[in-house]
Length: 231
Image (cartoon, rainbow, N blue to C red; front, side):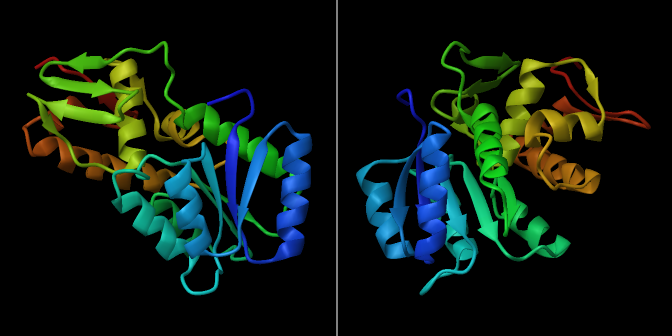
């Protein structure tokens, strides 16, 4: 990444594209634009951005369906996504987050809030180049290649489960409450409830369980969760 983070905005309303590009440009971000999924796919193939700003309602294919497709493909699986939408219903927000979207900004939004949300997501999703691979028993995680392996076998997990595992492995043998995990993994601005943590913990355990590592993620009754490679 250069000095200016590269943001790809997928939005079919020209007025919103103009407003977002102007305001984010003033905030020190570089913005490329696409009016539909087809144009966005061409831009993604040419140069993967640091973050995708994706409108929910798009012609041809919805932003939600596009996000799901991107999270299934190896090339774009780790791409951070912020959904822009007029939908404010809780089920819609949870559905977006479960689809792998990193954050959810409801229209109308202030340009300052949007820039702050983007920076928050970039801070928690960009691998720290100074951080080397993490190891716990036979489990290894490499932040730079975005891979988790057991005895050389790649683990299949979503981006949220990967961030959760990375945080756990960086802070092993300590107990974290659901609220603390929300803050550290999802960020303070994310509209996620405590029960969503439990859902992703279950998914992480399922991914680890294929190679018998699910016991590393431990439930501490009345306190939260702890990660430990110790028996």
